[in-house]
Image (cartoon, rainbow, N blue to C red; front, top):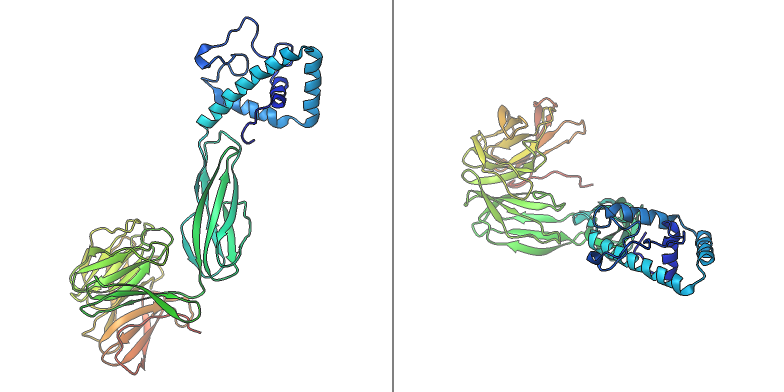
Length: 440
């Protein structure tokens, strides 16, 4: 209904609506003002305000909402006919206004503003869904919502700006600040969310030199990139992967740090910058990392392949931190990647051994542990591996980068954890790292 506006006319409305137009106007002659409430008369309906006043508030609002202009005129006529003494009428209106002032004070003291969350800052390459939330104490009117654009290089189109959850699109690339406003009938509370609209993706570079660093490069959406920051205090970052480790909607970074026997996690600040690295121990000399939910608890975990012929699993807590690593011996010592190779719904991994010519398949149990399954010939000195569906049959395949033989090898998955014969093609130079994606 909104904040109560006190006036003589509203006083008349309440008199009629709550039964005070019967020549009594509130407290009976033998009722006295109660000093404990500042001299406010105790006639119906406010005699129980100190107890169950919420019902009185709801009753008052409901009756006010039911009035129209014709009802107002009829009530005014009835009051005038019953009470020709203007001074007496004014006194009774003032008396009721005092009660309404008390009620307004109660509403101000009791009503709690809505709690509003416009959601996490995000990056999008096209249309997206905004997911806001709001809660309230329910004392005033039902909540109403409104999305609006605060700033941005273009215009924002909302499918339904009056819904907490709505699809949205943007006219131009850039950063937009959107506001979600929530009104509870008495107060309006707002929250904002920042959306970065960019067609192209950013990239990360890690160096494995002893004076290593990790560099962040942001897309300019024209095929060029801009270096925004380098982190020089990461010891020999051989491998890098991304994932939302603290579940705020922004991609974070993890690196494998060969000399420190750790992985470093850099949490996104939501504005294309990252916080300082946080280290988590692994087994000796990690060289490659991958990210997935290995124990199926809804939080991203980290797996590292270590040159000490072990693999370390760090289970995520969902807040950017990780449990103590669980490490086990393997036949591999360099690259690693993940996928469900046998179709059982659990993540598996494939890893390679630099001093041999083989890739190794380990099947996941869904609880963060893995069992050795098979080994496959690729080519001499495989150093990196990547997973993808290369022939479009729905089964995951993998490709290895082979350092000494200067080649890449592809093995097509059967869907049961096994793979067909390998195909090797020359790469023309020493292969160190490999990645897959759609480039046409």
